[in-house]
Image (cartoon, rainbow, N blue to C red; front, side, top):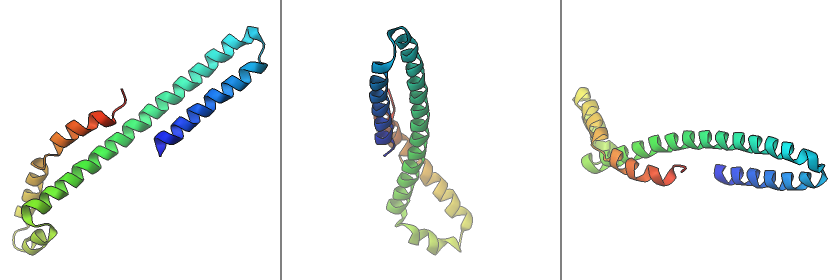
Amino acid sequence: LHMERWRNHVTAEIKRINRNLQSIPSAQKTNVIRWWLQAVHSRFEHYKTEHIKMLKEATVLLELALWKAKLDDDEGGDDYFEAHTKKVKVDVERTRSERRVTSGANIVIKNVLPFLALK
């Protein structure tokens, strides 16, 4: 959704400068184009910053989803932890932490993130 909106905005900017250049005297076109390029460059920097924020959020969500899947696979899901929580609260927390480390998220994220990053 964001990428499509950004693409539409840049396309509109290109169309706008093409329209405006037709009515600008030749002597001023160079300055107008320089100003326009600076504005577009600034907008791209903003888009890159927003993209990085979205990647970080997606990475966290992916890691949590993998952790949850690992918990469900290894221990039969939430029922296991709910049944044993009253008995040994400390062990459950330690087990959850261990599962998070061994969920494989670091491997998956390392291989997925390059496909999402801007280059």
